[in-house]
Length: 455
Image (cartoon, rainbow, N blue to C red; front, side):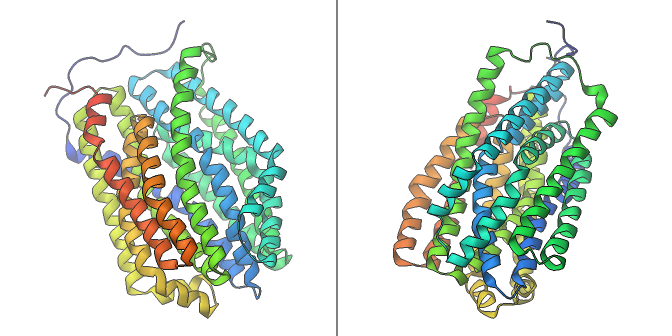
């Protein structure tokens, strides 16, 4: 089979310049930051707009329905994370043909999964709302939101494939542009459907769905009008061994992500069982966590791409230094977020809702949020490393242990005792267990996945 692959450079690498690596990390992280930060901002805008309506059931209902979407889309997000790592390694090898094949496979898989989600949506809705606990009014609002937003499933998953491929190639500015358009459209449509037309939670779902299809159109325009020179023939698309490795990687990433989203889903579900105020307060706090997590993830994604490229080049030294730099930046972001929330919590919380009892509950739980942010930042940076090295088994095993042995027992106790403090303690310990388990394996992963170099 003929490819455009360049001969692999097996010569020893020169000592890596830390300042140069930091510039490369920041060069990817800053566009990643602005691209990723718009995702939780859009969710916070949904909650904020609904949080200022007279009926709190709309806010609580979207919080419930969002759990279902998080569960489905995060579980299938391997189409982005797996694509990014494999793309980055092909980029490091300068294998142009493989870069095209990665995109073709990712788009085919994403479209099939999106259509399957749409076809199975009645069963997903029925099962989801039979498990999630909420008031009758909250569940009605949640179902209306779900029924409107679910039509975007094919667009959401295909967009994730494009994001993974572009980020793996270091094209974060393209992702930033499309994401800004998606989010701006979502905010404008939210206002129109929620306030102008008075559609409340259903309007929020319609706005989200429409903005996702706009994003899909933009990615297709980028691919066929701007970036077409990267596309080569589809020869080798159905290679059995490649699909076997891809399946194993995606399986491990999916198990890891299922555990993560199950933790967040159960956190919201237990909050709903405790009460509507607790549900609304924890939904907003969790979205604030997502906001900071996405900012930290801007460096995790940069590490994801650059570690994959370093693996393709057999440069272990660069991988170690990139990890140190990304970890330092991740902690700076987490500490700044904690400082801001500590300095003006009531001001920030009041922006999210005008309901005094919800603000009071958020004030009572804010200390747990700070600890979750700090430990979560460490775990997310390690995620970026192991995803870039395509070390799916390590990620899977660490997540399973943290979920089953740490989070689940304490969360069940919190549910039994209706204790919000125990529930947040379970989340904090879960993040801590992830950070420790992944940190203890990072040295061996670098040595195993990236051949040591000689200065």
